[in-house]
Image 1: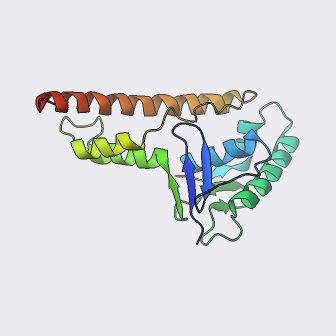
Image 2 (image 1 turned 180 degrees about the horizontal axis):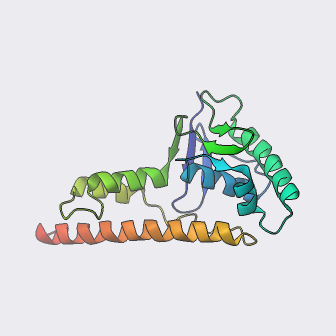
Length: 183
């Protein structure tokens, strides 16, 4: 079974069984993968994804570009041979398969922060916060941009802010804890 690893904290990196994935035809194919993986909780209508990545194109051409991008994406990540597949594809929607064999650093970071207490409680688990902080490699999708897609840029900016908020809260908690322990 192939293992897909996606790093969104810091520069965007994709690895399959520990080897860098190459062969993406464009930034938009990489952006499609990042978006689907990070937003894996629900299926996304093809029209919405086409509009996200090709906002200034006529609908039929944007959908055609999405089909081409999806074909390239499936090929480079080995989706057709993965068991289970990484992408759940229907005629109308696309969704990243959360049951597939993959790792996504931003999900691990946010899950560990939430398990450690997050910002919802005053009592945190210091070890859990430290584990979450160890996963942080840099800002969300650092240096990655799809300049002709305002919607993609807004989405990535919002995610960047959400991660920065969690990071700041975790660092503040760690500083207070270390001071309390005289470290």
